[in-house]
Amino acid sequence: MSAMQNSLVTGNPRFNPTAQAAQTNSLSIEDRWKELLASNPIAQLATVEGPFALGLQLADGSTLLAVDRFGVQPLCYRIVNGELRFAARADELCDTADGSNNIDPQAIFDYLYFHCIPSPRTIFKDVYRLPPGHYANFERGQLTVAPYWQPEFSEPQGPVSFGALKSEFRELLRNAVAHNLDGSTAACFLSGGTDSSTVAGMIREATGQAAHSYSIGFEAEGYDEMAYARLAAKHFKTEHHEYYVTPDDL
Image 1: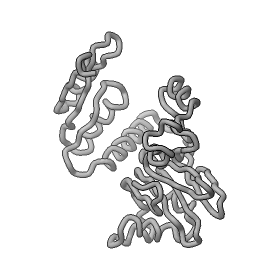
Image 2: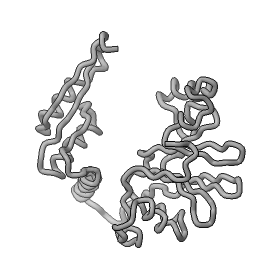
Image 3: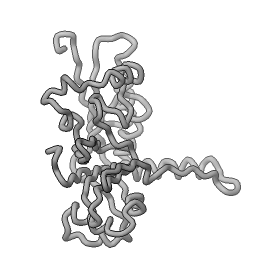
């Protein structure tokens, strides 16, 4: 995607069924976004679920950027000579083709320390990634970055049984997995840990069919997780596929 583009719409947003935009199924996703954001856009962003990245010029001349609540879809930006540029990838916004003159030393430190580069920083100087659940508004040369959504935690009112909370939690997990299935053959990565094993199990509950699970093993004692993946695959009766990486593959 060009860093000079005027709009960017990626992902699979789920619009609030009560919103007018969600009822206009004949419109393109970009037009549905424009319709939804025509009034009180920041508040409207909080009604949209699912993975998405958005970059649009609004009717008032301002430019609005936004990413989904968990930052599944990336969106990067930078300001050059008073102009906002944005793209799905950070390397599309660096000055040189290979980015060799723009590597941020602090980003390298962050990667070595955190095993990732936390947003809003990217590997490139002056190129930023919009944090999860945030929007950026660019108007009259001024950029505002702020959250449009934050998780809310509230304690249950009155006595609630463990069994009821357990059932509610499982239902939330099942619905979350089901929302991300598109009707094709369901598949997932399986390491044997809590997260991937839960997804594998919930795919069966949501579809009534076994998931295709995929695991990667490698020769590193204490780090290879294939044995745990096999246990999970057997328990959830997945269609399991294994791949091994050897030193010769590297």
